[in-house]
Length: 282
Ligand code: NAP
Image (cartoon, rainbow, N blue to C red):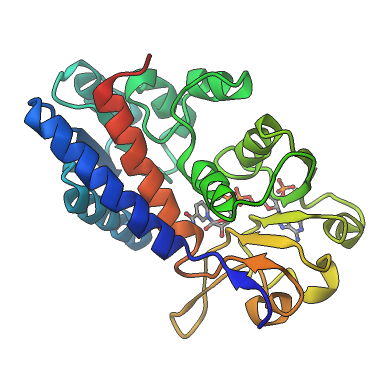
């Protein structure tokens, strides 16, 4: 192993310690940030993510509640729940856990959330604000990735980032955030022809595909910074990333592990957004 490991777990811990202090200062002024998570159905992965969010909130002193709804909940009923939370003064942040059951249009629900309470940063208003570089709620995973990159103290300006993946929650927004940092950005996806010819040019390689070990050392430039966003569960129940960690770790300068990489940072940025929501967007 040659690469330095960027530990999302350690960085998250450091940030959460500071957040705990900030939240206790806010509490002295009578303000306790409050996050409400809405969970529809019984998906085990979603349940476990929600549990993690509740636990992390409690650790820093953010109050949180989970509204659990049956999988038969209709789109109209969910819209009503979100509207009630929009009106509730004590709720600062609203997160509707995705994915939703097939009969509910996720975009309808995302757009029902008041943008000022949209701590996931998925509302088109917040995405638009991010695009034009305004202060807003940034989507948590891309926000976590940028924070990890900045933690290396490596100058980002002028670097070339290649991002594999163009989802609305990871690939596209992380590209925009890097662009805002004066990085040159290339997006790749499933229709990209000769993927390796792009990845080998990357100073920063971000892999958000969702398939185990699609990237090996032969696709990586010497001394690259490699961020592995993928979370894949293997048959034995263990988690692995989209990047062959051992192989790529011999060639890259920095690499993120899975687990304990981007995952803990995603939750940390959710906490940060909830504190921001409680303080009120400018
Ligand atoms: P997604 O919506 O399924 O997007 C996957 C992207 O990968 C798509 O843009 C797809 O291209 C592209 N792709 C698929 N196969 C490819 C291939 N062989 N070569 C090149 N590109 C390919 O997934 P997502 O929501 O962005 O998530 C990606 C991964 O990150 C998943 O493993 C997810 O679990 C993980 N994730 C982790 C966190 C965290 O906090 N750690 C948060 C979010 C997501 P097309 O657009 O052409 O289909």
